[in-house]
Amino acid sequence: MKKKIIYTILICILYVLIFSSKDIYAAGNVTLSSNLYDVKKEEIFEISINLENLPACAIQLELYFDTDKLEYISGPETSNNIENTVYYIWVDETGGNNPRQNGNIVTFSFKAKELGMANFSVSGVIFDKDGNELVTSFNGTSVYILDTTQTTKTNTISVSSEDNNAYLQIMRLGVEGISPDFDRNIMEYFLIVNSSVSSLNITAIPENENAKVNIYGDTRVKNWIK
Image (cartoon, rainbow, N blue to C red; front, side, top):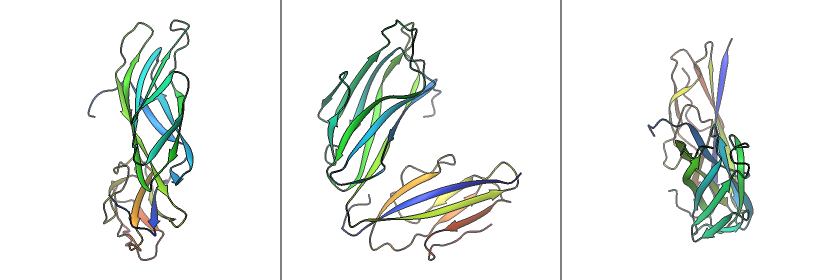
């Protein structure tokens, strides 16, 4: 059966001048997600903290954000914002009978203040019902603050294979600033460029030498087809 994997690159084209600017075993993950990844200036959006495979009975987390570009708006009663950090605690009041293991655990509201990429990161400690600290990896996220003169282009890289390996080994765009860093398992990327950039020189090389790669989007981007 033919397998196809689609990688998407969203390029924010600016009509104002801006800057483009664990090899550890983990029992589970704490991740961040946003209800919006393209945010207009002055718009309010939400950042959620999520658990993956963590039987948490007590949680103490710190959410870090960029105060130059973001304003903290609100969170639950068990949270507190001090400068660039939101502190959050949660305890299972049943003594460990109802642990939080997967899914969203808390959501915070922020307001976009300035244009550009705004980063979020998270750290902290999580305990199980016996009071043992769980080994945890922490993953941040970013949002892109735009104004009404900005537009978004989409380029798509399609990898097709007759076997189960339809992943990219290398993806290069010819410019700096792609976020997150390329990983074969990540299917969507963002890139903020100045309005003078009218196309991308995309190089996409598959892991499987028999796979076919097609690039769709700006007609002037470089196509690499195996």
